[in-house]
Length: 349
Ligand code: KG4
Ligand code: ZN
Image (tube, rainbow, N blue to C red):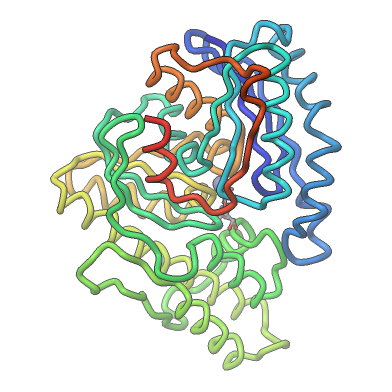
């Protein structure tokens, strides 16, 4: 089965063709970073317009790369939420229009389900059941994953997401947008122990997170060490301590989830899972407990369409081929900018 994945939930226009037997046949991604950088963050209206400009040319490129025709597509998987409403509408309207034109089923995919399943594209791949640590720009969650479509929330952030904390720290350090990779890069030059930041909720006794206090602590440290005149070394020291605080909290909660559930497999996904320091830390902690940790291939940590096609394929299989092709009787579609994962999965099952 050949599935076309479409992702336009935020600032990446991405398309991919995934074949159930042959794997990824083609993928294309256009990042809008250069356009948003001047504003220090994503401007929703600009994002939507840019998706409109790129989505169809990228579809042609993906088909070319795969050596396939449009009519070879068996199903279409598109991110329907959560995300920016206008940006989501571009992908969803294209996906549903294609489904109607080709008379193929269209699956509305939850963006986080895509991230959650992306470590299955690693080789070797993890086996169910596992604990998933989802660390993206908008979410930080720990989930018990028993199988495709069988997800139970164990804990989540009460305020900022991990990626959001990276981005805000980058802003405070004058590193601009997108922040995660920049903070991670300069942390390499930091001196360990030069300052101390809090590890919020590390001893809370549950699996929830909170990162807004960490951001405030970074702000206080920046002011104390020089404010606008912060020297390069202090900047690197703050970045290193921030990354270590983040890694301490995430590693502690993830290993706690393994212990509480008795599971021996952790998967880590979402943009922050590209972070080298975090990867190393989690590998060490998890191995010390006789368990295994899996990450998506590095290029599939951040937003992409392969993970959306994979989640769509899983959903089509759950329906064992009973999904109806788009037809004149069912032309409606909608996006869900706010969409709890549990709700998405129960409506698919
Ligand atoms: O999953 P993602 O691409 O988009 C969302 O669904 O939100 O995650 C984006 C987030 C951003 O906050 C970005 O700063 C962070 O992931 N990120 C990183 C790294 N690469 C991306 N954070 C830390 N280290 C990185 N190497
Ligand atoms: Zn994402």
